[in-house]
Image (tube, rainbow, N blue to C red):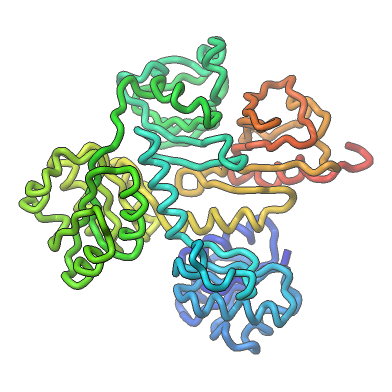
Length: 453
């Protein structure tokens, strides 16, 4: 596939890196010479310095031969203009990252299609949805949905009182009532593994499970004997994202407070929110945290645009008694260390955007993609076509690579925990967990049937 990416920031770089490694023909455009120089040195991609809103620059990037153009600059207007020009150049697929909710929410005046965008990715909407699901799943720190929400992926830290701590996967599956979920990945001592039957779940591990949505309430007590529902939330920051999140949370959380250092932004947020309390001050002020009874907070969310302030505020809130914290960090380089210093949940908007875009870039019937642990593994939702070579075969005959695992099947609206004798049928939705080195092999396995299949 020939892809033109506009924007060589963290999102553009990650996309270009991933796609070039998979053998796609990539061109990337940016007005920052340093970013273009880095792309030229690090990646197998055509790097163009210039303004992508100029047709001549797009022509230099071989837009006329492109199968897809992706606008991921910091400006919505540029990304929209790139898609418009892509339409004029007859590029079949046009994707854009759009930050303004006006372009993507239910109150939109123009649909993305009317703006010549085939697929619009709004990181803010994804973050709000992610945080809402985390709040509604006590104890979870990673969430994703598959099969139109019928199969849930949830990640948890394993506490000392967890009933499944010290047990192997073989022991869990031997008990009939435990066959309602599947452990698909473990993080042990900082290393992600796709576990086998003999692997043991230890206290302190991070465990990822796939579970039928109807059975999640039954599974939660196995992961933690006692997890209280969230009643009090404190948010550091009253920017657009924080206010939109607070509006959603007001529907089911009784006690919400926002802390905002900028007085004018605080006033604007207070005028907009009906139930939340908005305070002017710093999230790193111990006196202010005491005034709002931070020790009673079930969740502290750091949502400002300042990574360092977010981390410091979350650590301080935890020290003063907040039960759990969620931190947004724009820089993915922070992610590997945040877990070790006490961050319960970390969210990186740029990597979320990459995950959302990847589902439109994978070959075959890929419905969605979710990246685990800073990109070390992917959970891929695949809907095999009627000519797929996997249909009618037992899973043991598929010859899945060692670094890939078939985690669940959605069949007739119900989740099936597969084993080696499970036969894939037309209409199944298949959830596969794979490390990066096996993605191309998975695509081939689920590809079209050949004469020799």
